[in-house]
Image (cartoon, rainbow, N blue to C red):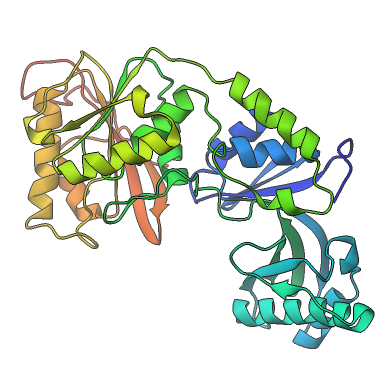
Length: 394
């Protein structure tokens, strides 16, 4: 771990397809030497930027600080190399620790075994030196380590985030099959929503689209209502952290746009409102119990975000017909609007009946999805997207 005036390498992990958004966020925060990776972005910054990364990044899942790497050809060598590190610089016997491991190796097949060997090496060092060892706490440790093995290359990183950053602290109530906050924020950002005009989520579920849109437009830091792993590090700078949090609150702003969340299920609407209240944005969102297929646009143009049932994970009597009805209602009722639909059901998406102007590969949990953009140009009823340009695939 480094002094505030020194820069060091940092890696922010994200979901597939959101890397460029994350890089743009990091550039805005002042990161340097930004390099896009698969599901991650590598960059350099100081301690202040590390703290800001956890507080402000909307599309990051974890913020890691790599501190050493080495080659290991077998498990005993892995154990030996980890035990050679002076862990007393980062832990005391009274501290707790947790190990997360990921492996992509023909030698180290099992991530859980790798995590176990790493833990053994650390606690054995403490037992030999002090006669007492740190305890393991997988839920809320003082220090969380990340071990990544690619072939024979082992990289050890401090996990500065603790719980994954999609856990903003506001979504305690969920509907079935909710979308995580990082993916929702990424889709809102991809939609181009800036807080102007209006944004409509007509199948809001737990309300994550609307809440993330409101936090983005109001410039509310997504990590405002939670704690982070770095707050328990031995070199934690409480004064610096207090200053960064105060600056974030001062940077919040009002916006003129309108966010509308609706759902056919009143229970979902109630859950959305409860989550929005915990996020502090309940006054920035209009909630309605409504059927999208009976809806009318509140203005001449706006953005609609959809996370409809996919069929693979939610019951639907006729998923193809359902998607066809979405497309028909958009075409006939929402001219001048832009709709973004994410789905893992490629076959059902073909029946929307509108030509997408953009396709983006994303993952909702383990499900491979496509986020598709549809532009409903103004025209006579029934003409739909006749003037839509050819689709662009990403």
